[in-house]
Length: 67
Image (cartoon, rainbow, N blue to C red; front, side, top):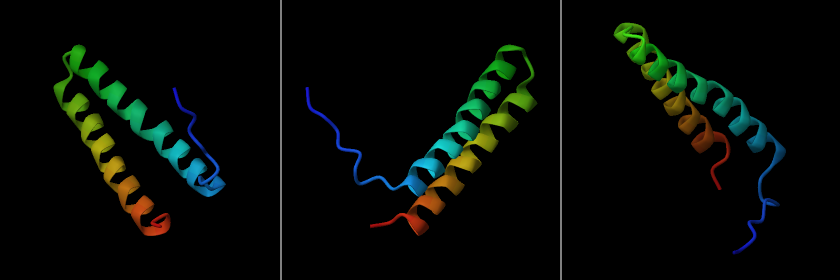
């Protein structure tokens, strides 16, 4: 088992990842819950929103934190 060094992660990157995870994960979980409840339109809308937020997250990470 090896150790992972977190010294290269800036506080700005950590906060950005944390905020986006707090948005993306609930959107997907609520979308899945709505699908189980039989509300297909709401479920797919929430999951689509999660995908949209993920794409925005990837753009922000590539623009501001690219090495």
